[in-house]
Length: 291
Image (cartoon, rainbow, N blue to C red):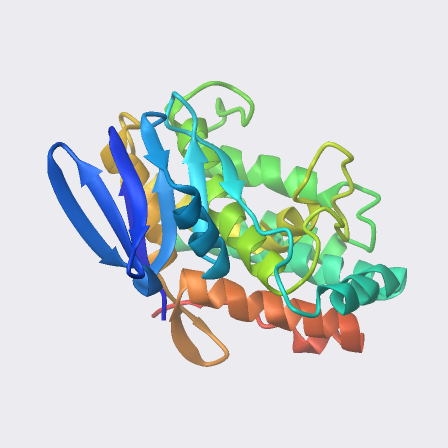
């Protein structure tokens, strides 16, 4: 099982040798068995990689995230062909009926708001009850924008009435970084299963290459929110980023078993695919926190 998260933060040369990732850095050489790697984050723009390594990372379905000069996630490595039966999966994805897509979307949004309310209740913050009321009021297509109202209420309760999601701040930088890490994990899981990330069920932006991933990740954003709330970051540098990266190794419960977040995302995605294909939202498996 792939479990290691490897972060390259400074000048280095990466290459493949005998199924090992070879890292040449500061005159030293480190070898990591490639089958152990779940995620590779290239945080520095002064890193060079061989084509042989990139090809093998794709073959092993290892998530690779590239950061910009500010060390924020900018892009990722995604295979053109994630599954041997991708043509069949694409046909199925295009044939999903609007009615079942609406029902799955509603279930996901309700779960997201429930988890937001749970966080507010857990830390004895205001408006948990208000969020639960909004959850009950949300309808297919969300014509009253209950999700948007819930999000504003939630963030103001969590980070203060002065908090604005679009404003430059340490909190927003951390949120964006954490969400990008989670989104990348969803991209990998969706592509590896043979589906397209561009075709969403309630995100439909023509400028978003990851509409489907953005749909599915909604209830998982709360993991990032909670870590940032409890950590009280005064700066956002390497140590803080590693806390967010390590969220992928956090244990949650899904299908009555403890799993890392990375593995749980795969299980959750498979349940979403089944629910869309079999038109049964009861097949969706959401996670719960380890008690």
